[in-house]
Image (cartoon, rainbow, N blue to C red; front, side, top):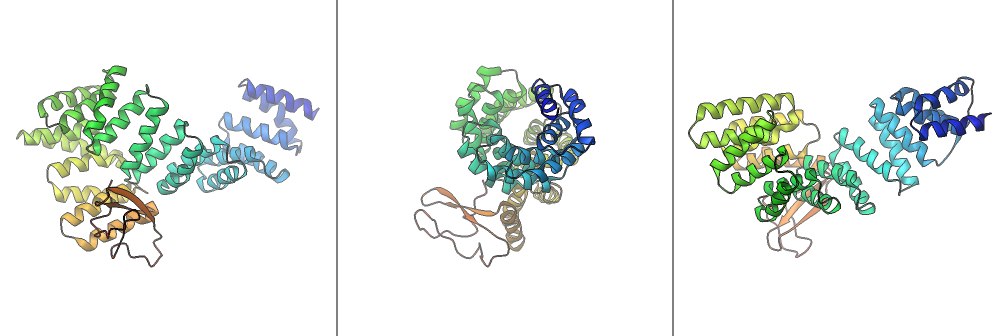
Length: 386
């Protein structure tokens, strides 16, 4: 009878009839059945109808009956994720990957857990192996790109978006994000063909319009940029990308009252969503509002948990203000979050990473040397901020 119930429930799950599977298996469970497959399929069905606590209960019981079951570990990881117990989810997902490294779904789930836990450095490190194993998996590249962006590692994040463009060259999100990332790095010539490609895919999309506006802005075409940013704002009224740039353009035109209104709107949006601080801070930087820039970056380090990018921007601004001790502190905070120090050698124009542990005796500001050409690197000027 148990085997028949398992067979029927498996068929129900395969057809998306999860409530039917529960109706078949739940009585067996309540009667004390400890058959692993009963518990496994019941837990799977509970997950699908968003009863994660019930799923954890039955899947943990299944785990007591079997050993080395990667699918069970992955399901437990998902169940704990759904309950918000990210630490337990991480343990089970890592176990699933250890037992079966080719289980791509477990890699994706682990990346999501680390990202939503604000462990961006760990997510980027773990998924570096994953994108090598599964070079065509879009989810892995996307999660890693977003994690690297939160770390302020913009060059490597851009590489991930470029990889996604290779995997799916007609995907508007990938094309526009890659092009926008290139623009943020001031690599306009590389971005241009992707801007044109975005226009060929959908010229009326907000993504394409804001991208075209940013290109005009960086080319020094303020009138065209203004009209395109206004168009983007009509498509997305809460667009910080558009609002921040319009504040700058209005200020450059001498329209301080309108610029102030745009800044106030941007500030209100950042209060609602602290992780959106970057565009507002960039406006402050371009408008040379240094005190407000430092206040905004300090706010970001407090509110945007796990975001090394805010600390890096703050370190740069402190250095420009001559606040060396404060800059060194901000740099160290970024090293701790990232788990590495990223350096740039101007002699051979290469970037490389040095592992960092905050409890080590390594002093990152005393001396550094390029691992490629052995040139001495002046510190902290050689600390990479992109």
